[in-house]
Length: 463
Image (tube, rainbow, N blue to C red; front, side, top):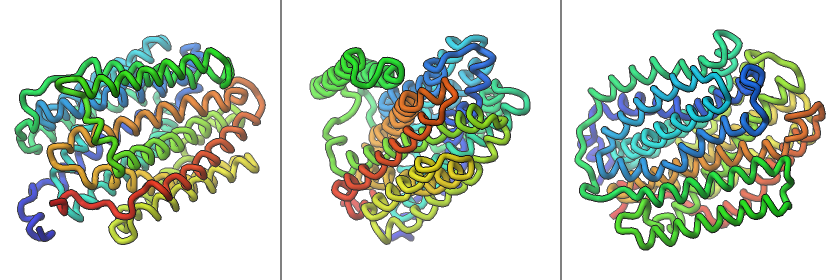
């Protein structure tokens, strides 16, 4: 089918809908990093420990990612429009509760509730993007989507600095309330009515619990490794329990009457490669924000606003890398762009690893951000480029799930690697963490060169 024919049958408000969905997704991504800049202030006001501060980031990402597949399944069962609106309202209400938290426990509980709302909203919104656009328009829409997501993470640090230095850290959560209500009202009017694509199916609650519990155990192992050690028996036992949980999830998915996901879908090379790339991109991105905010505020004594402003070039570089990749991926293919993105990310991380200084941190992280921004687009286009319309909801859920697992893992691992610098006066922990991130990106570039398909096929071209 020609691009002209595809556009004629497309929804006339699709680009406007994309704008509102993009802003909603932007809120979800912002809430991963907007809190990073406020962590030192939360530590002071609530007396939070390093573990509690790490969980403030990881708990949201875990609930977000762990329930994402359930959210994608709900979008197929109930219709994407309904799930988008429910998720948006849950997220908005949870943001209000989180801003009112008076203890680290209440804060983490609110973050979990935010993650539940995000898990409903994100896969349903991405499913709508995939179904509203066809052919080359879908590549452009995914480029915009990825630019908002990647750039939003960097902008979250800037916004967090402005709000924390101004009305205070609770406002990094309160700001979601009016925005969420406006978007919900607009989408309720604009989104087309959709019939469920899997009406009559069941929810696999056990599957959701297995994957969430396994991921929580693994993240807990990463967080506590900073104190217990990476090669201790306790850390090894936790990792083993997580692996057993994942294996149980796979076995259950093969036996369940209405499985949470089709394991065969994840076994497809494009989907598997896309999820691998999204994990790496998100982990690298979250790692540098976590490191950067503590380096500038703890080690250098900068204020929240100054720290946020230093991340502005990071935001611009992320969006530029994503936007450029969205425009050229159809011409050059996914594989070279994935490898280039990871090499650029590794080179950027290596700059502060060799000489840690405010200027080198800003310059290096900005370069790395351009690479991770490109990687987000390649990952989405690769994973979603060949799924059929009836698989869009669950495939989107898979991509979004691994995005959040990457965020949770990135925060947990870098917190442990840099633990000495996060709780002490030495810079050695920051240096080790940047070295680790650069090495991980370099190794991933070699893996991507082998695994990544050359060119993702647009869904509209399948069949």
